[in-house]
Length: 111
Length: 112
Image (tube, rainbow over all chains, first blue to last red):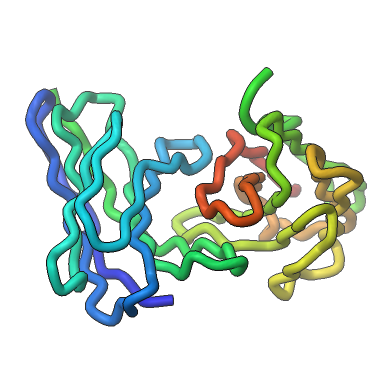
């Protein structure tokens, strides 16, 4: 699976959009981009995933660049409850369903 | 009850004790996983079960023994653990062909 690079930490203001970048320059054509988050002392929570097109669900939007070498997770209106570690993961969609979690980005939403 | 549940939520044990962690999923999934998360380290995959068959053992020491009696239940039997085994142990489940994994809340294990 391709490796990802994320900033170690970032702050954002409550009520504003939070834009979380992820670089995956070695991603291959059949690898998906997944985002999970982990609130302190809880299990990780799936957020969204995509291959080429931008995706949106009730939690967030995922913007993938045309060359697929980077992506951005957007939390449209950050709340204090969005404070968590956010993990960007790229992997094949196959029967090998391993998730390789890196260090992620620690996002702190401030009032 | 819905989702993935784990019991107990907290466990303190001595190095000579034998204990078991339990995971139950109510999502109709066929694959279940054990992960370990030590302080300030990324999650580490330990075991994978697919249709009750173990398909992955990520070089885990034999003092950790998994058991999957059916597709809804997963156990992790613990014996003669070391203090460095203290960690958050997370269970997850997914459909075989669907890569969205659903995690339980974890068991916080402390080995004295």
